[in-house]
Image 1 (tube, rainbow, N blue to C red):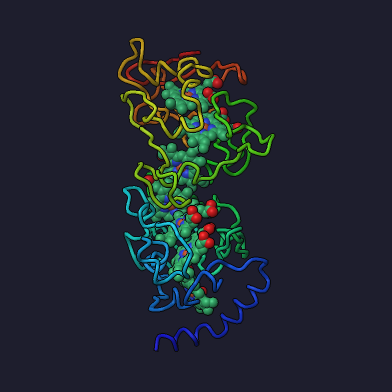
Image 2: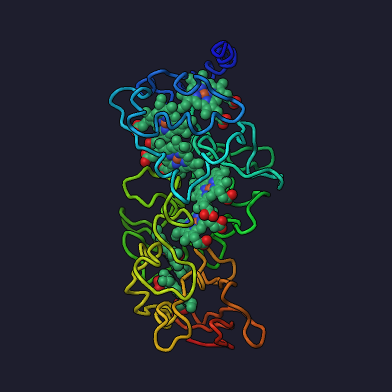
Length: 356
Ligand code: HEC
Ligand code: HEC
Ligand code: HEC
Ligand code: HEC
Ligand code: HEC
Ligand code: HEC
Ligand code: HEC
């Protein structure tokens, strides 16, 4: 009975896929007989079409290796993805069921719709290929046109930018990463800077030789804490689904670990050596009679981009308030001169302003 359903449903579709296969210069991974022992039935046996099949179907092959054997063609070795999804910070694909639909249009326009994410939201099972992991995923609707996704950040923006159901504490990532901002981590394109003194190779301001990396992926910061794990922002033991730890609270001691995510690309010795901001070390380590303990990078810097200031300056209002004259701002004094002033109040110290 189930197969009858599948076959009637797929009669036209099979023809469609046949033509797609013919058009594509590369066979989609899951339609390649040498990967899938049971062809379409590898996934469609006992499949629930109303919610995209859920994640369990996928992990019969992408899960633990003793389980894989019965499903994957002999000799194919897949990474166990379930490990990352069992960590504290993860995309909640196994936490909730039944909210995905193949017909849904993202970003969500109805604020009352519950947020969800499943494997099929990020991977189109019929089209995913080695050269284009986003093949087959529909992007943002522009007028009547639905675009196809080619870049990782476009995928993420489906749920982390203009969604009407964005969690209250979450910000619009499209606005944060806009290359029109005074500063941004270079995800949509290269940054505008000539010199970011602390950068560690291969990260560079501009690409000038083959190995240079001047454009980042979200997954460069958001993916597994284990280097050997599957690529992608599936899950991590670190808060924020980050590859490394990030302490965002103030009054903590500075260490390699506390700000590990930043120190992966920005030389700790440069930051603490005050090569740019002359009072970096004093704030971060809380040395020389500094009131309270250290200050997290997060108190002064946005992780993604700033719509107001250069150098990703964005003050964390949990700790920073207006100065005695009611001002809260950062003013740069000349480009690359490492001089500026701050108007604010923090750790009970009035900056009205303080200059460096
Ligand atoms: C890797 C697993 C996998 C394989 C292999 C696979 N499918 Fe699917 N298929 C899915 C998933 C998951 C969905 C639901 C997608 C969604 O809801 O976004 C789906 C949906 C469908 C649909 C419904 C489409 C729609 O828009 O509602 C049809 C029809 C279909 N598959 C046919 C096939 C045929 C024919 C084959 C073999 C050529 C095949 N599938 C192979 C996983 C698979
Ligand atoms: C029957 C086994 C099987 C099932 C079920 C299955 N896959 Fe796969 N998948 C494979 C194989 C085999 C590959 C190819 C791996 C390779 O070549 O390294 C693959 C590759 C992939 C890749 C691409 C990896 C890359 O190299 O970029 C993604 C993404 C993926 N699968 C997601 C899914 C999702 C999502 C589902 C559920 C809808 C699913 N798979 C179900 C066997 C399966
Ligand atoms: C289909 C929707 C969807 C897509 C696409 C999506 N996400 Fe998510 N993401 C979620 C949901 C749902 C959560 C759980 C928290 C929430 O509701 O925002 C989440 C959580 C996260 C978190 C953890 C947030 C926290 O508060 O700790 C990060 C980081 C994240 N996503 C990054 C990404 C990245 C990077 C991409 C693109 C590769 C992406 N997401 C694509 C739906 C999505
Ligand atoms: C340079 C590293 C870096 C890159 C690149 C990056 N992030 Fe983040 N992201 C962070 C850090 C650090 C945090 C945790 C602190 C915070 O909330 O700012 C974070 C937090 C988040 C959160 C949880 C907080 C919230 O506002 O909901 C989401 C969701 C997120 N990032 C999505 C993305 C997406 C989507 C991309 C790509 C378009 C991306 N990030 C690129 C470093 C990065
Ligand atoms: C929020 C979006 C998102 C979700 C949800 C998600 N993935 Fe991924 N996944 C990605 C991204 C992004 C990559 C990296 C693609 C690239 O850069 O090649 C990836 C990579 C992969 C790979 C290739 C890993 C490697 O190292 O070869 C597999 C396999 C995979 N995902 C399977 C799954 C399965 C199975 C699920 C559900 C249990 C799932 N993914 C859920 C975004 C997602
Ligand atoms: C994966 C590498 C990577 C990580 C991780 C990373 N950065 Fe960056 N960062 C860069 C690159 C590349 C640039 C250069 C951008 C440019 O040229 O405009 C940069 C630039 C900056 C700038 C200067 C921006 C400007 O326009 O002046 C600041 C400030 C900064 N990062 C802070 C941080 C903080 C804080 C963290 C930790 C939360 C962090 N970065 C994590 C790669 C990274
Ligand atoms: C008290 C606020 C404050 C704190 C805390 C802070 N910064 Fe900064 N940072 C600044 C200011 C101001 C500048 C701009 C200096 C200038 O005028 O060029 C800056 C510039 C930078 C730059 C760009 C220039 C360079 O050095 O490459 C990076 C990267 C950076 N900070 C990283 C960090 C990291 C990583 C941390 C945490 C370990 C941190 N900052 C903590 C205020 C702060």
